[in-house]
Image (cartoon, rainbow, N blue to C red; front, side, top):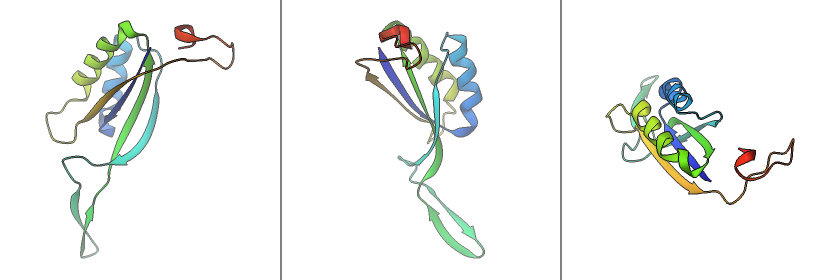
Length: 112
């Protein structure tokens, strides 16, 4: 099993959700996060004062999948989240040793 962590722009959530649903992904966890990468934030003017916004709002998607569906899910995220502009986000793929469904005590891929 693998865990996909994807950091995306907030307005892309519905597109990504639909794309993942299209490849059979049934569940995910979404968190509102803040961060910056190469874009390094931006400068804004508020009540006449200029200030720098270092951390930009992003969404973090967490999805645990069987090894065989990871490539399709990553491709779906790439296609749906890409705008071609700086700040589109990142995708991380991590190994998952075990998963347990609390309600039924199912383990492994059956728990996902």
